[in-house]
Image (cartoon, rainbow, N blue to C red):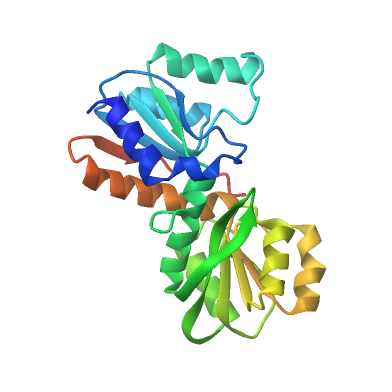
Length: 253
């Protein structure tokens, strides 16, 4: 399969044009071989993932967090030299989708988390850099908050799922990764019962406690494995002749 056909599909399917304000330089960040037979998927563009791709003989890597952000890197030295050098030596393409993969209504991180929770009556949630990247919705019935936390602990047993709050919930807002106070404040303003996210930081503690909005944080990394895996499954259907592999390289953060 030609690289241009794969990247054109990703650009259109993920609607990259709608995320011009994203600090990530979404799309093809490193150009490698024209012919693609194997693609490696991962959350983070890092040396370990590139080593896995090279060992497998993959010609393309697709990630959520790429190597190029705004004007960075200004110089190819240190770890940047090693990372880019690895890709170029092995003629491996790198494709990144940051906010487009958070926001996608089918394979996005937040859409998949909503699927896990079987949320109904979904609506856009959490405006970030000019785009709504999360979703909110309702459970079929009121459920103990601790039971929701158990769902994620069972799915991601290696993670320390953090839970703030108690009682029962029905309306849930979802914002993967590090939604932080922006996501929490919007959840408070829109009167959600619970925010499901990746990180729970210090500044969120008292606002959540005093507002009565619960928070479940099951790990920045874990919350963003959802979209990249869903995207790989979509691409396996779109390009059945291309071999595809997800490499799980957890940071436990």
